[in-house]
Length: 50
Image (spheres, rainbow, N blue to C red):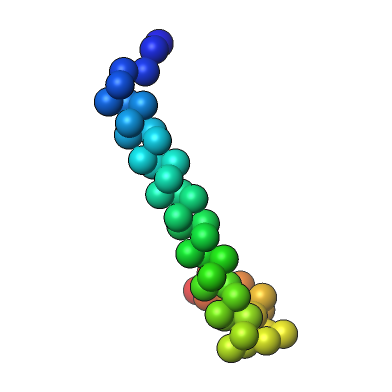
């Protein structure tokens, strides 16, 4: 099945959004790391599991 031009455009936009989210995630992680220091991993796991 061949993707239409609309599908390609939507896929491209989604890919760009994923990259932007990945960059934002890295920035947020660095900020959390600065605030929580050595406890950042533990804190993140607790939040994920709550």
